[in-house]
Length: 202
Image (cartoon, rainbow, N blue to C red; front, side, top):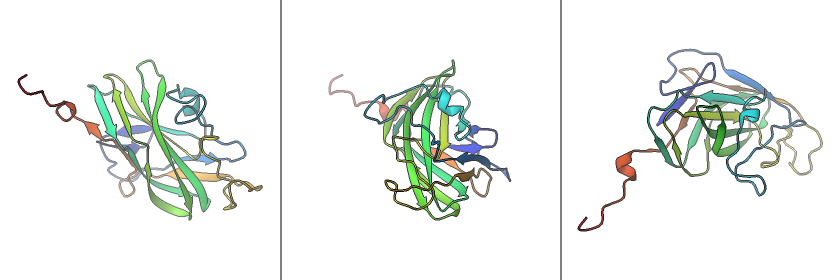
C-alpha cells in the first residue's frame, strides 16, 4: 500500500496530479531535533509523539482514519524527493499510529545520511515491523533531519561527527508534486495472507 505525501500535511492513497509547493523546514544542529522512544537503551518503545510533531523542524503527513483494521507486516520504505541547502545532511523518517483522541505513537523509523547536495531522490528503509492500525486510527509519517541522541546530530559541515566543532543549519524541502512524488510504502497484509493453515482434520 502506497501513501503519497501531499500539500497541507496530508498522506493520501491518491498521487499528486500536478505541481505543488514543497514543504519546508530548517534543521539547526546546535538545537537538534530530539529523539523520542524507539529503539533506544533507555526510555524506548512507543511514546506519544505529539510534542515532537509540533516542532517547527518536524513535518507531519497524516492519513484519513482507516476504515478497517490494517496490519502492517514487514519493512516499511519511504521514497523521498528532497532538496537541501547543504551537501552534508540527514533525513529521518518515522511511522506513527494516531488514535482518535490524537495520541501519536511511534511504530518504526529510519535515517539516511547524505554527502551530496541538490535535489535528491532517496529511499529510507525503516526497521521491520508487525503492527495493527485499528479502525478509526490514522497513519502519520514524520519527516525531520535528526533524532538526537538516538542518532548523532549531523553538523552539516562534512567533518567527522565525533570531532566536529563548527555547525551549519540546513534549509530542507520535501517535494510533493506529480513529477517528484514522495511516498511511504506500507507492506499491508490482508486477512487471507495472515491466516495460519488449519491443522489436518480440523
